[in-house]
Length: 142
Image (tube, rainbow, N blue to C red):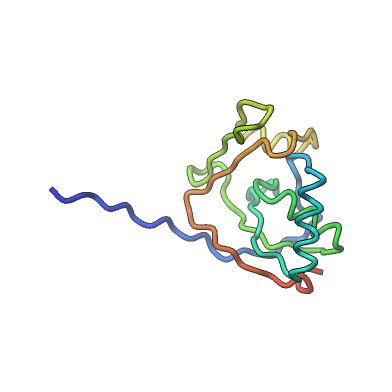
């Protein structure tokens, strides 16, 4: 019998622009990485990749440093893919060097809502869909 080919991953819809004031972090920031990303955005004049946000709760799943860099640059909006966090499309694990060994989706949302943040680079979110880059000029985010 022939081999079964996997269907290509669906592409998430185009990102939308969200007001920074709506968003909640669930992890702290690494200052050196923040400096690098902020400088990159300023020099390039655009944000290359949207962040990933949980629908309804507005907790940032991926993109804490991009969010904070834009905030410090005076932006009011950020491009974001808003996803159904409780679906099977989004998975959460931990980075290999993380001090926390296990993370759940419920804990991510709770920490985002309470401000009791994980250390930087704790949660590692993967999406079973194609998440395309969509560069957005910095001026469009002000």
